[in-house]
Length: 209
Image 1 (cartoon, one colour):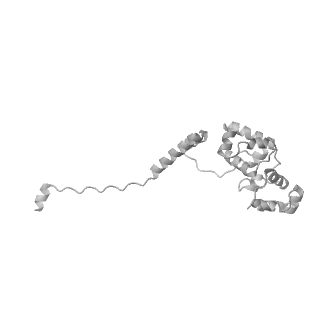
Image 2 (tube, rainbow, N blue to C red):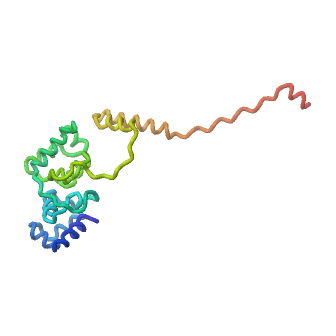
Image 3 (tube, one colour):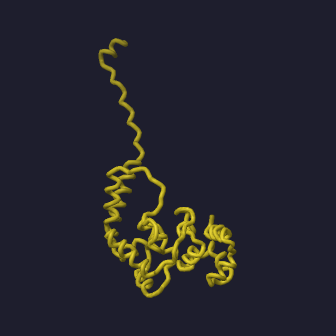
């Protein structure tokens, strides 16, 4: 289901329509229907989730549990959670924003009242593999609900750790080495050379005569 279909479903259970939601939340008429083609701001999305008592993760992704209450978020508290998360993961804001190709002034703008876009919040949540609900509100589990994956071998884990800890130049070198190894592994095996014809001894030749 799309986000607007989920909103419609959750709203119907509480006797709401899009029009009544928009009136109660002070949104422009017809604005919710446009969310399938445009991304709403995080504060508007949080207001809808709060009113309908549903999870933001459930509203905008295919992840998360069935609808649960999500309180409105505080932008300053969100920033504090994000900085604490970066500190715990030993990642600077410069590195995070660079890795995500986001403007370096993004967090500064948030501190000064600019409202985060849902797209940027989703990128950050995916980057740290955390729940969007937790990032926005601090409620619920921090870890993102994902499907279990088969365990990888120790060598693969070691390479991933090295890659994550590396700067851009070293990451490039790791990727080039991996691609080079992959080409060697997948290179076609050259055809075997034909065996030389068996030599005929002089004795055999005389016998034939």
